[in-house]
Image 1 (cartoon, helix red, strand yellow):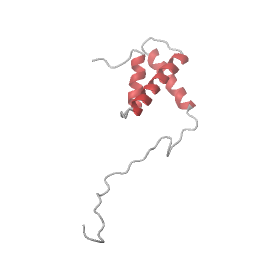
Image 2 (cartoon, helix red, strand yellow):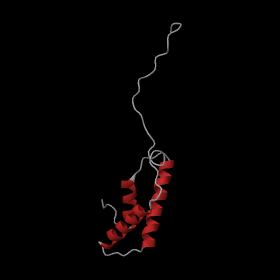
Image 3 (tube, helix red, strand yellow):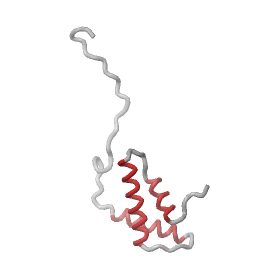
Amino acid sequence: MKRGELPKTPSLAAVTLDCWQTLLVDTDNSRAIGLRIEALKEAASRTGRVISTVGATEILDAAWRRHTHDWQDHKAVGSGHMARWCLESLGLGHED
């Protein structure tokens, strides 16, 4: 590099933003959680199983813990994974 010359820098390829709890903050997600609980109870009911609100809440909590663990382990997981984990907990997972 010649004197007074700036070093070459790579061109910008992408910009990423941390969305949840940075740009968008959930201040009250109780309605969303309630809808998820009811959806789990309905999914179970359609197969002749009955689960309580407490049981559905425990399933959702376990899925959230798994999501958090995977996220902290730098694994890309999202709502589809959580839905599958919840359904598997009900014995309604994908059959090979």
